[in-house]
Image 1 (tube, rainbow, N blue to C red):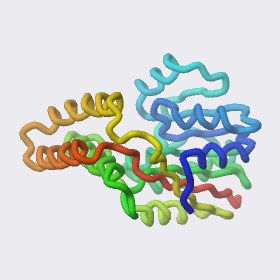
Image 2 (tube, rainbow, N blue to C red):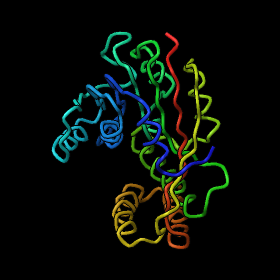
Image 3 (tube, one colour):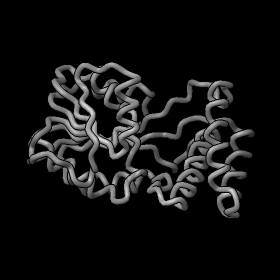
Length: 240
């Protein structure tokens, strides 16, 4: 099923939320989306190993219901069945052992609770500007990995589906989301990307493989522009 960028919000607005866990939250983008969309959200615990991201989240945005906490998603410091909803968004590719994190999330989820995953993927009939996203990400991932930071290449849709199916959820549904409404050559977007490109060019300097990956990605960007790759959205329930 293919849908517009609003599919995530539409799905979330059908859920109560309750007590929520957002794993690998980064700067809290998905946590804030959930806070806005859930019909009866009492609390969102947003966890991440990067304390600086959590601090930034607190400083930049005011959220009445979000509590940030520095924590490793593979070893969550919560009892079984603590949350009514657990979620992870666009972070599986940053995890050393994504399936262990998914199982930990399930452990903390109450029977009948919602399990939500969103993640970009690389395959399928995507546009040239969407392919730019994959090329850039894989260059960044290779550079980070070379420097000792866990960062995986973009997964395929089937890889993601298999990760999620092995969690052992019921009533599992998959959706595909994309947004092709923007200008792939938007000047503000390209200015933002150029700052990141300069950073990664410096990080990979002297490494022939990384230099080549970067050159290929930047040539593709200049020719085709940039659009976010498609994302897979999975929603299931914990059977208990």
